[in-house]
Length: 253
Image (cartoon, rainbow, N blue to C red):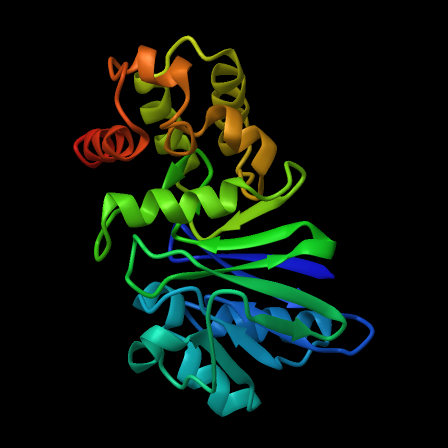
C-alpha cells in the first residue's frame, strides 16, 4: 500500500491510498479537489474511492467534484449518510472496505461528531483517524460526549503499538505545548515535543505518528494513567471525568 500525504488549507491532510496490484486509489477526507487531481496525475493513478471519516466540510468538500471527474465510489458512515455528500457505500463498526487487496476495518468513533468513523489497514499498520485521534491530541467534542470520545479513543488505543496514525490535521506543535502543561515531567513527552519543534522548523510534517508513542505522550490516551492523573492534580478521578477535565483544559488553553 502506497500512502501519499497532501497538505492543504494550512493544516489539513488529505491522503491518497494506492494499491499497485489493482490500480485502485482512495482519497481519505478530500477537503479540496485540485491538489488531489494534481497528485493523481503526477503518479498516473486513477481515483476509485473516497473514504470519509466524518461530515465536516474540510473533510468532504471535494467529494462531489471528484466524483464527477472520476466516477469514484464515496464511502462513509451509514449513521451519518445524510451529511456525507454523494455517499454510495454506507459502513459502520466492524465492516470492512477494500482498496485492491488491502482491507480496512471500520471503527465507530463518535465524539468529535456523532457519526465519526476510522479506518484501520491492519496488514499495512495504518490508521486513518480523522479528527478523533491527533498526534498528542484529540478532536473537540462538537457533537458527542466525553464518555463517547473516551470510549472511541480506547478502541484506537487497543491497536498494536506499531500502528502509524495518519490523522487529518497538523496540530502537533500546539498539542505538545498543552500536553507539557498537563504532564511536564514526562520524559517521553519532552523528547517528542523537541522532535516536533525540529520537524516543523525544517518544514516537515509531524504526521504520521506512532501509536505506541502516542500511548506514552498523548494526555487524551492517558486519562486512566496514574502518572498523568497525579501530575494534573486529578488523583482518584475515574477515567471519564478525568478525560472530560483534560479536554476542558485544552479547549481553554
